[in-house]
Image (tube, rainbow, N blue to C red):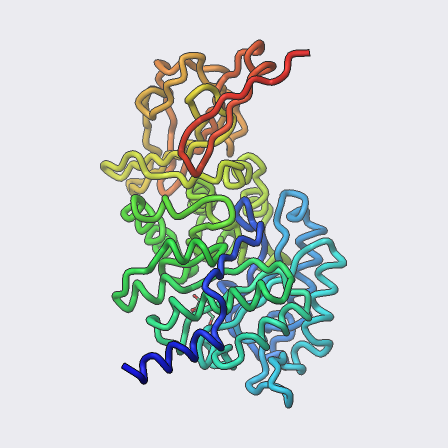
Amino acid sequence: MAAAIVVLGLVALVGPPAALGLDNGLVRTPPMGWLAWERFRCNTDCKNDPENCISERLFRTMADLVVSEGYAAVGYEYINVDDCWLDKERGANGQLQPDYSRFPNGMRALSDYVHRLGLKFGIYEDYGNYTCAGYPGILGSLELDAQTFASWNVDYVKLDGCYSHPKDMDRGYPEFGYFLNKTGRQMVYSCSWPVYQIYAGIAPNFSSIIEHCNLWRNFDDIQDSWASVESVIDYYGDNQDAIIPNAGPGHWNDPDMLIIGNFGLSYEQSKTQMAIWAIIAAPLLMSVDLRTIRPEFKAILQNKGVIAVDQDPLGIQGRRIYKKSGIEIWSRPITPLQQNYFSYAVAFLNRRTDGTPSDVAVTLQELGLAYPGGYAVEDLFEEVSYGVLSPETKIKVKVNPSGVVILRANIHLPRFQSQNQKTVYDPYQHVFRTTARPNF
Ligand code: GAL
């Protein structure tokens, strides 16, 4: 007993205070940017492969292209380093240091470069002895490493969970979040905490995860294949009742990177990944070679209508509302609102492989779109408008194999009401409020 009291006393003296809440005001809509891992992995061979190795050169080049190729203009802003940037040893003062043969000017210089382009800079570490690829982890140096990131003007930290015990994460992830906050620099905090716990058979404490992390991984690493994308889609659909309530402005489920434009997805499958990621309010982190991406894939990544669904200010994660014979329908409540009604984004998926497009016919009402004044409906990839449709209208879409049709159905606002009234949705109380605007 006495020993237990001593141990608790020590924790109270050296540990962070009880209130660790993140509340950093960041990523009120899901973060958007570019992340190295899926496409560039742990290629450290700059001697033989200087253009593709994990290096200052690669990140500068991608940052340049994010701006010059129009990605920044549609919302992509974070340039995120992943694993394999570190030297195998810490510096003499115990500080993390990059492999200077690949990052000759250091991380602050790269961060400054990214900032000069008007973008934000993200970095990767691991709450363990080592990162997944075997570089130094933060265990034992949490405060110093948070300070180091702040001194490099880092805007976003992805904290992985290899080489640590999942049980320790309930304490460790909040503790590192506390040290990030303590630096006074606002940094998005991306956690791998739940996925490691789920794999270890521990039920994650999501109320704590939401409080301390801006986004978190809860499923497998994405790979360059349609099978991998499908497995993520199934995971999010099959577990939606548990997953959806955790998402909201400032805290998001992360189904992992967009692999659009790489080797594994067809054009149709790429549209499907983009549409479903938007429906589930996912971070949009491209992992693709922006030097060689083909124009049709670039157009998918830059589709403003689909991005607007992803970035909808309500921040409500959408759900699978229908699944039968290879056809799925997913929907997400979005703005604008009127009375007690949402607008919606609706995605029709064809998971069949029988080689010919499938027709889906359904009334808006059957999709849950019941606003009596009707909806202005448009197809976001085809950029076709269907005009204002009443809830009784039957819509018919043709969905290509492994493809998608994504519609936006905006509540049709009667003019006189929209001028005098404003409906807002309170995500915390789950209620609509209509406020009268002053009538001049
Ligand atoms: C995995 C992580 C990946 C990537 C990789 C780096 O655990 O989920 O996204 O960061 O480690 O080694």
